[in-house]
Length: 119
Image (cartoon, rainbow, N blue to C red; front, top):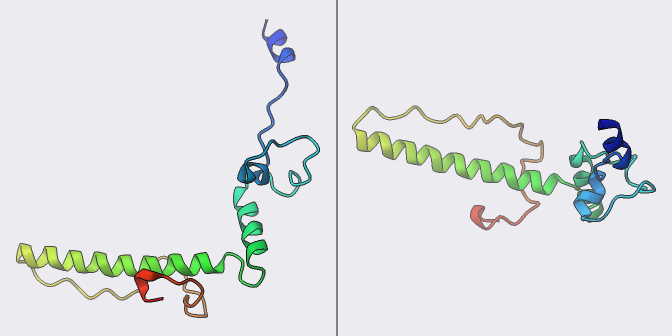
């Protein structure tokens, strides 16, 4: 019985990353499928960003996210200091600014206008 159900239904092929991103039907003749496999959607997202901005590609988005992390870290440090003051404990050690990400050599700024960061 299992063989009759498998022969009646065609094998499912998920859409390539490009067709999924563009929300279109992916056919066997899709020109994007060899280059953008379904399990690697970040490849098409990077290529699409490069088409929109041929010089910097996805760098502006990364820069914006770095600034957002910096802003949120400062906000978190401030909130933690306020909690310690309210609890009457000793002051917290100063934050050294080292984060889990690598800051780009250009300083990470100047690509996106971030209204929350004066840009």
